[in-house]
Image (cartoon, rainbow, N blue to C red; front, side, top):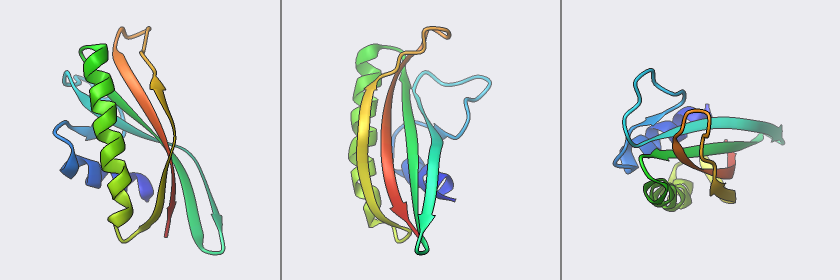
Length: 111
């Protein structure tokens, strides 16, 4: 499961906790991973992952997003992954929860 592979990888690489769902009592800074789509052709899988960076300020959320992008570029070194491409990233502040958040969307080709 590509989400678990990326979860474990980012959990080791980032200085903040990484989750696949929002915890009941989230820390000030954390990252959420969500798979938004996938496909398979000739035994090669593709997935699109949205990775959300939460922090107490807009600047900190943007900075955490930059860390995520840097670490994701290196995820191609994992045995299961053969391509990582940044699709887009943007301010995705959650106005309902009053939480600063950035989102980076990655297209990943994996086995």
